[in-house]
Length: 188
Image 1 (tube, rainbow, N blue to C red):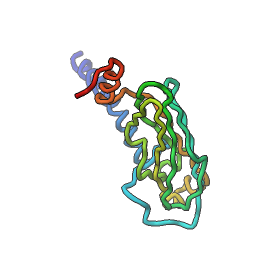
Image 2 (cartoon, one colour; image 1 turned 60 degrees about the vertical axis):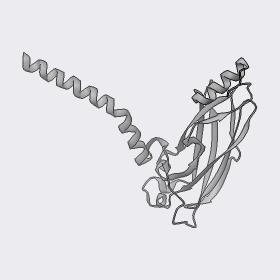
Image 3 (cartoon, rainbow, N blue to C red; image 1 turned 45 degrees about the horizontal axis):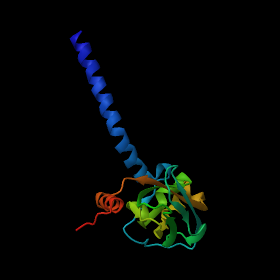
Image 4 (cartoon, rainbow, N blue to C red; image 1 turned 30 degrees about the horizontal axis):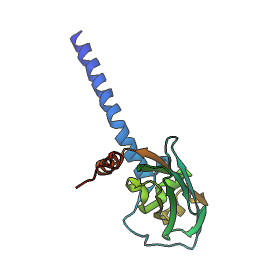
């Protein structure tokens, strides 16, 4: 009886550990393989630029409770594979309060996710827009030339980069400034 109880406890502990580790493991897996449209992050431009081109489409949306307006400033562009592209998105806060946001993103088709490399992106950090503020936010990217050698992704002719902005809590300093503005106090 004791042996059975110990085995059952061992199974429960193992299952709990696997469940706990599954989220970070899945996130790592998606980043490494591009599974689910997760993009890569590059430290610089590509060393190789091919003569082949690929279309990149841009999409922007907001979560249900996000008060901003948010849209791509270009619908699509055609870039040579390996060439660095620069696109802009526009965000506007029409409210009378500062709002912080964080963008989530993905790439479709999913097979292309592992070959879409971002060099710089507004999605890497949180964004805070003051009341009435309008900003242009850049994303610098390239499509890895290895895409032409991938069994599935080599047939990709168009990639869609999609962002969704979600409202997040204001950073402490911004929240304090907003609170002081509401109460009429000045910060020394």
